[in-house]
Image (cartoon, helix red, strand yellow):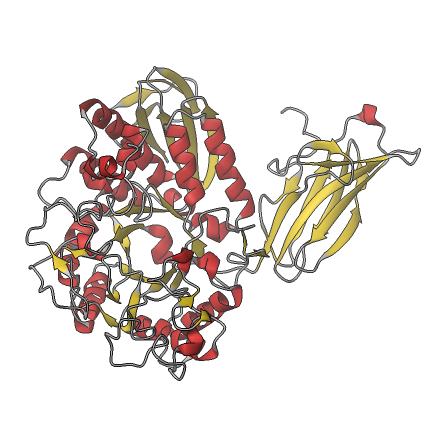
Length: 619
């Protein structure tokens, strides 16, 4: 074994245990400076960010090392640490992420200190299927008069979406196809065949738009989807198959055309835009009532909420019949918090508390686009993962790393990005992160992998479809992306239709109708096989990860739990490549194909075809 580095937080000889630390536990730090440096003392220098104090802890000489057992705080914290080395002559130098530096420029390492939290087993062990309700499946053509505002309803399921550049007189996202709860129920056998255990639905509540992020009434499901009783039937049917249902909670803003704001007077309630005496007036932030108010990203149809207004908190969270509690009571098993960055930490913590009281074991998932362990939003360091808020977050860093790697990047960069997340996240949050390739907010993964670059005009993106060469490449890369998705730590999530080969650039072009009867059967079979393996192989639920190769186009890692090992080998380049794995059995058979390879002297040597991926299981 090579000599340890001076310090590397990912080397257990330098820091043990790996990664984040539970409150009150001990972490051993060891440094290994060169003898020629003649350091006689070493000090661990720690910033407790939330407490806003610096503390110093001397390390003890131990042979060629300096060592200290450091007890982390008993309360959740974000620590930043580096080392100061001193010589007998009194001179000193600091050592941090960039090596030796002066004290005023040293870049510290992060140590997340968290309160332990349990994540529901049903969430970790399966896969997530994300459904955009209007576009997944319908059982009949709905009537267009379901909302106080006019709605356009497509007669046939495979009609093209209306586009604002072609129909400027129609509001954005105002056309409906009529997907429904009944449609989802009719496809539960299909979802079960994929290995789905969690159904995450985009908003289901009454709203003016197709996407329903402009909530009109939190207490009513959109009639186009069905009734409250239909929602309960969906939850009951899902539970009977061992599935669970997560709802999208949009609590940072409502629609302007809602019973609460009621800018268009479509509701009998007196809304905030109609009277300052409205019970909802204090829910919003008016600069010049009634026409000038804060809205989400300046979109006036989405007026922002004043979350600190107690009547709002009671209505959404704390009341005995609050929105959070009501829908859990009706059958939901969790919530996904839209734009969690824009909800105060105390608000999220109260949602967590209400959920634990109403339905212990329910799941709270947050939408965060960056590393959620050190996220700063509106000049405040956030606490999503420290034990009192979300169970887990959407893992955008995973998606970004996969896209970069499969787009020609180095596998080492993928490993580096993911090791940063593993190091910073509590173990439960890392293994429960929602990993995905595309969502309602991103272009379709097949389009990105095949096309590489988007057409410059919106009209061009609306009409775009991969040509034959692009489609062939995209399908090869998507198979590899899916293999990584289903085998990497975290919970794999599939945006409806990705498994069928759906295409599309940004919203709304990524939100077409599921192509029932026109799926790409080869791709679908690949996803189905991965879902079966994810469900049946315990190491893919919570097994520890070990990288065997991450260089150029070759990525190889294994997941191990209770003596069983699952190994994944990927070649993401157009050229052949070589890889090797330690392997005790005489043969290694690929779980994704009929291929079988001999092993010699405990080593499996592989000559990898272009754009190939293998999954081996070792007992």
